[in-house]
Amino acid sequence: MENVKTESKSLFFSRFVIIGKDLAALLRDFVLLIVFLALVLCPETVNDIIIRAGFEEGSIIGMKWKKGITKSDIALKEAQGSIGVMRKQLDSVSKVLNEAKKLTDNIDLKKKIEKVQMKNGEIEKESNLIQKSLKKTISANAILVENAQKAVNSSNSWGVILGADTTLAQAQEECKIFGRNYSIKNTVIYYRQGVYRTIAITEDRDIANDIRVKAIKRRPDSYIVPMYTWCQNSIQREGYIECSNK
Image (cartoon, rainbow, N blue to C red; front, side, top):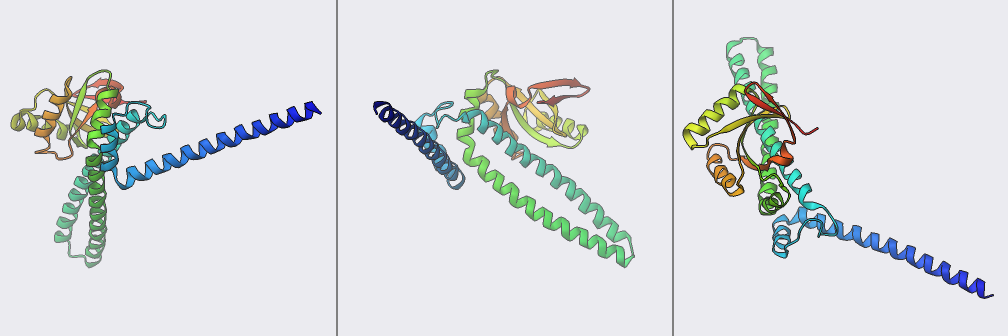
């Protein structure tokens, strides 16, 4: 009889522990959902609360958030730069189409060109809206990202992305312009994800920010990256450095 009672108690406590774990997991997931929604709906407020609270790596519900947010921020900024490059290419195509339309008397060809131009106009509007959305998100997260970058960048090497171009010649010209007109010297070119990026490298985060202040006069989408995580593996090529994080 006593054995039966003991087994019943053990079964009861086992079930109690299982239910407790399930409730804890459910509560954790619920809190994570609330935090996620808060970051999406009001990032400025949440960021301010996190920074003033002095949270460090892993202190928010056990999440390793600093490395994650710096990588996400870089991805957003690179997406913004890539959209800018594509918009330039789209502008070039539009100019060519306008010239072709002027030179031809073929009515059918003119109609086809007009359809392409209309489609290009729609893409231009959509890309503009996306860039505005990215800019708003990046701006809202700026202070939080800066603090996270300082915490995770063990190499203490900073890169200021001055611009992104589709050809090496364009990037080389950007280096000359930044040096001549904005006193940004010692720039280098990195080839990453199919784009040539003009970069100024420094070991001081404050100096990097000063460089960025100068750079945004020409390239408003200039931004700062921790080189340790941005380009983990590199190969020296003729006139540029090829970067691969594989």
